Length: 539
Image (cartoon, rainbow, N blue to C red):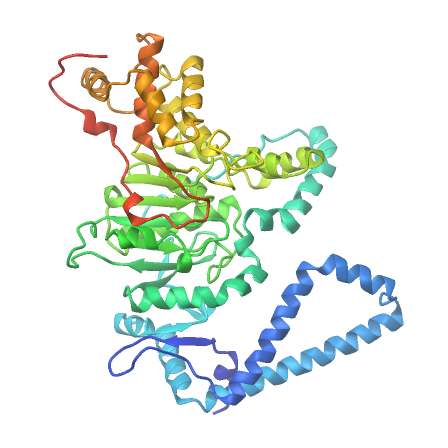
């Protein structure tokens, strides 16, 4: 009995029971003892989290009130001891309450069985419960499959090693950047990893996850990444379902810096009939860790491995779909797995540094740039340029987040720079300085009508552009980079560049956080589709 009571004291919170057999879906109903004691634990936890983030203010107040003296420290220790006694009592009472709840005891018994024997049937049954994810058993490990694990994961670049003298001289700046990124920096870049935001959106996450589990028959899983972080995932399998013609393709969704799979971009491909795999960044909701670039690389790597080796999809049938800062994670995966089917980037930027410079005070520019380059070098364009597969860039014409101007406009949207850098890598002879200037002006058009008029004024003939590409591919290769354009005159280069822009780019008249409609989730154009054996004319 004592052992069972101890397990109830340390057991996970149970949130919801999913329908199975004769049991209908319902929220878990704790008895009075568990309910009130758990509220005390939540209040103490929230106060601790709040005091952590406001610690400089609290420390200043305590100093002014003389709490850093012997007498003050004794008073503070008495207060802390009282809180600790209350917290221990709350945990004990909560355990007693759970011990008297038959539903919780049945759940805890099943969880013990899964941890001890871990059969397929037990794993299927544990899916009927939504509970605290830290207690969820690991479903897939990064090292479960054979392979060359000595190969390092591709991450953001670091500064080149320096000599001893340079290291000593740079030591103050290095220490300052470490403090900045460890305190406010990473929380500004990835606010979804903060406990306060997590607590604020928790009811929405719980509701969203319930819909995915119940309405869409989702399968939740815990993946163990190479760095030891646990990644929370949700899989919606549409293979073999009626009217799910796209179910054989898997869309892996990479969320934004305050996005969660429970309420994020999974809904778009799901409504389009695709199989979908969502995951949360390290430190977001059920996932553990801190969302540094290295951890992001490890997380998205184990997600792809899970899709290949546990869910049974092939690389060519996987599409990486990313929103906002999720483009960094998606392009890391595309770089590491070059045979992956396609990449779709929605409201994504090319590089985080220009955005930070535009949003932050000019006096802090030096330390901001150094901090980001050293610790959060989210260079999406650099990763994307090392992927040779099909790419779609969705640009939001009213985006207020990834623009560098004071007010939203298409000219300063960093999605333009992402597209130009991609085209420069793929068509280096075509994208010279004059053509880049023409493309930038084309992308700066305020609306679709203006873009159409510029397209018409440039006398772009789609059929002629297609023939030029087919001719080059048949005579040379369809593998990037394509050296097409070195023998073309300026107007012809402009025509071909405008044609290619329209192949890669899809405009969506919306703000940054507006949900993407499923009809706008269109798989990218593939240049290999231009291959043909017969070529009649060229541009």
